[in-house]
Image (cartoon, rainbow, N blue to C red; front, side, top):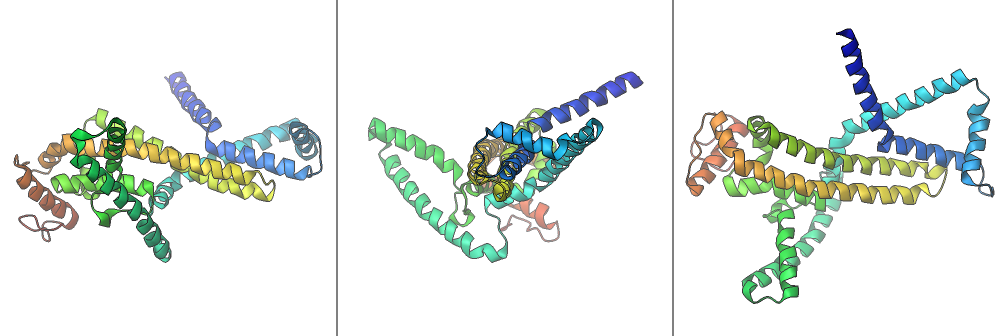
Amino acid sequence: MLTALWSGLGGKVADRWAVLLVSPALAFWLGGGLAWALGRSGPDSHEAWWRRLGGVWTRSLGTLPPATQAVAVVVGLLAVAASARLAEALTFGVLRTLEGYWPHWAGPARTALTSLRAGRIDRRTARWRELARRRDQLTPPEYAEYTALNAWRTSVPPAPRDRMPTALGDVLRAAESRPRHRYGLDAVVCWPRLWLTMPDQARTEVATARARMDEGARLWLWSLLFALWTVFSWWALPVAAVGMLVGYRMALAAAAGYGQLLQTCFDLYRGSLYEGLGRSQPADPVQEFTAGRSLTALLERGPDLAPATGGTP
């Protein structure tokens, strides 16, 4: 039994280190070491970069005993692991920042960006309505444009008041607001309860999509921090910019899938939410909308403050 236990622990540790070896945290520290080493070798050096890097290693650690070098490597890996865990803890805050939930002092910038995006959204919405009115008479290029705009509409909140200053914020806000417009259920309030009533397969799909979105946010964070190495070598800045762009695009693409899954969960499993809370789901859509607003108010405010017949939650 003990042998099996240690074998299992060893396998988990090995898996953890395997993930670490391909993580942005390791790339961040290795890139920083490379920038530092190349910066120390001097800008006028004409040696190949790997030879310069080897020379810096020899001058810095190569003269130490092998045991000391091994300890230095282990300490370095532990530092990488600790920084990776710290980045995981900061992921939620980073994702909120990318969505556009900024502090009060950034209010003017948030308002300006939201207004700028609103103009583009309104123009595209007007074009979609124009094409929708004559959908049966569209030319092939117009139909392709209509199809693209129809898909784009799912990434924009239905109500202008819900719009965010970033595309990522709009995608997630659109997913959160649609259950409220369709069923009267506020996704932010109802989601934790709905999550516990969903089958394992649905929760696994949602968790996987959320993990991909978090990975993009962490890549953006590590790329932002990579710009610090510019003090050693200039090329760290463009690398950081490219990494931030890739990380944001990854998070945006994953958010689209995550948002669709969130809406689908409300479409399929909201009945289990009503059942779990001891309420019946009305069959009539209008009555269900009123019941959904009442249920949201109950969960948000409690029985003493919730309106009896579904006021504004």
